[in-house]
Image (cartoon, rainbow, N blue to C red; front, side, top):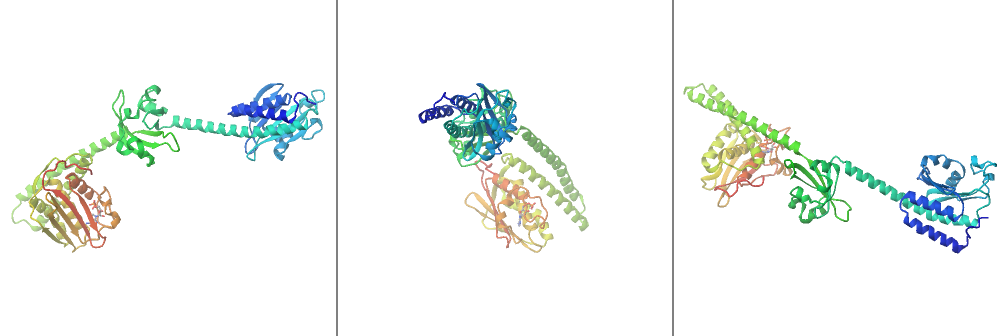
Length: 532
Ligand code: ADP
């Protein structure tokens, strides 16, 4: 009988206490296995033992073994066969501890080379399942080279060891999977194509991934510890002082310029968010290099401007030549020829207006100011605008009325631009009203320094949910059924009126026609260019 350790209850408690103290210091799986097996073998004064860790399918995921005092870590594959046969397989299947006084007479023991009588022969063995939260997490096996070596007290002791070891192995497995996840997260962070910076709430950079270093052409020491505010101008109105807007917004996005050491500023798009469930309140900044798309945008813009300009000048030649030709024609011109002349010149004027509108949209979107504003005689302006659309209304047999409510004489506007606004609204009123319908144009004072214009028709009107939308570019309502258009007219009107410091809006109940209102100044303004 093994006499090295006297298994009275005081001794058992002391050993268990030692085991738990040791296990408390082990965090990872390998250290835990090593401590369980070394201490158990020592406590039981034997020389052989193993501990196999199992996954939820009872497949070995790790194992440690001690043989003649030598520790060895086996890989899971080496244990794959062992857990399928013999004593360990029996314990796994029955989830019961096994106590063998003599392995040579127990059919559960798988005979091996060293079990031959001329070798060590029969042995004593104890095999215990390790459990945590009702789940089998491993098998602890202790073997002595001679039979009848273990007492039942030792068997009970080993079961108590297994209770503690089961929980320790379970915790170590959790720790390992947490560590794996952490490593995977870190690799994802490092290898992400997007450039990512992590800062604290003072904007100090704590971490940067490889892409960020590459994009910003900086090394570790130049980035970590520096401030995000040194890299770019953060918009406080979007992020909030002390980033408090990030507490309510999922993600804040804006475009900015990053100052580079050895090259031009880099145009970027920033995606900023508070890191979720992060008690320290760290902030994640994803930086997208948009220099290429900015370049393309500039090219597109330059190309379009070139095309518009190139169309405009030959078109002006066509229009002036037509006027000249008309003047040169005899007085008693065949009315049919006269009609043809009118159609050509109206069409040419229309194309010219469209090109000018497109050019203005482009300019106003770039926030350029109105350069040609001056005092303009309101009567002439209205007259020329109406004369352009009157032929269309007449051809549609529509009734047009003009009402000047207050005596007003001057506007302070870019004359050509505002004429095109009026023509657009009057043309729409005619285009969207039925043949034989009604269009009216009303002009009245709107306070001391502003005039209110109203264009009303008795067409189908505009659905209430579309009233704001129709001022956006390329927005059309009922575009399949209604008259043709490209949806840029009202966008131009809004930009032009706003740029003059005026307002434009529409009222419609979707049945009795549409009522477009806009205001314009009578005097020069402090700043014509306002938010569009
Ligand atoms: P387009 O007329 O080229 O489509 P606009 O920007 O001038 O573009 O108008 C946008 C849309 O607003 C039109 O497609 C039409 O659906 C609607 N709309 C504009 N004016 C009127 C109107 N007077 N009556 C009804 N719908 C209108």
